[in-house]
Length: 214
Image (cartoon, rainbow, N blue to C red):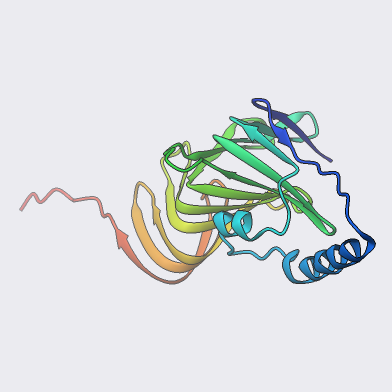
């Protein structure tokens, strides 16, 4: 079972008391129903900025400088850090938008850990959507994944899934390792980049120079 712990500054919880005629109440109910039908589906590939701007609901809570800790059993699985986090609830999903306020260049930081508790990778991005029900994080904007053994992945959109410990992308990706550089479109990889599959790609392989005794 996943356990989440959120630390951060004082947030803002939204609530409203409505006083209106029966006619306006019926109209509001109709508009909300239409909004739920048309706007509550969350699709992979939709930027965090768009999810925040297009949401039919105000955030339930705003947390400044949050530190979200995800657990698997008693061990930390991941730590999400950002300048600001907005939490939303819909009838069929709950999600959080992590991004910096306008004018703030701070990046989203995600630390991933192995089942033994060691670091497996870090993810940096401009913004991030986290779907708690799915254990899924969509990172957007100048995404960089780095591992302790000096492997890197760069793209504009990467999806991390907690359950299978994999990262995916349908966009252009660039993987850099100590021995090769690969560019391509479409990716499925272990989160520590120890194994990966890329769609159409080209590769640059570094070969060791042999001494020429002749």
